[in-house]
Image (cartoon, rainbow, N blue to C red; front, side, top):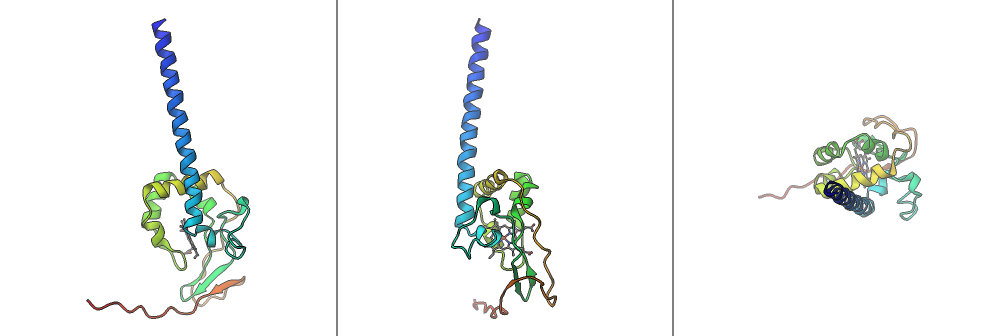
Length: 164
Ligand code: HEC
């Protein structure tokens, strides 16, 4: 009898704990979705998003883009994050995001500075969306003409470092 009571209490505690964990994941996922909007990830990684005033069907979220960004670095294409993040564990994503560098116009410094909690939330949100789309076209080196449409950047102004 006592054994059964203990078992029941244990099962109840486990159930409650997994309920809490589930609610917490849900909140983190919602937060991740919000960060993806607020920090501009959709602007480049979701096709048509910026041009349509921040609107895109969820099916197209973060699938990367065929629209290239062309400048002195060559031509880059926003990565398909639905494929990229779904191939990484949470720990791999955190390590990658904190250390990553990329060519323009990817604002990698924004990712480098995010907290574990924010990066983890992004990871949960993109995992929940699942894999979709195809990989973005490979980047082209300077001097190679892109075939499809591109946004062209003029050469950047010389950065003048303040004398100390
Ligand atoms: C202004 C456009 C732009 C914005 C805004 C942007 N990205 Fe990117 N991102 C790119 C481009 C272009 C690349 C490809 C760069 C390259 O090929 O070197 C890229 C690459 C990446 C990569 C590298 C993937 C890999 O496999 O190397 C990750 C991860 C990434 N972006 C995540 C994000 C996240 C998360 C946000 C929001 C915080 C974001 N990006 C915002 C344009 C953008």
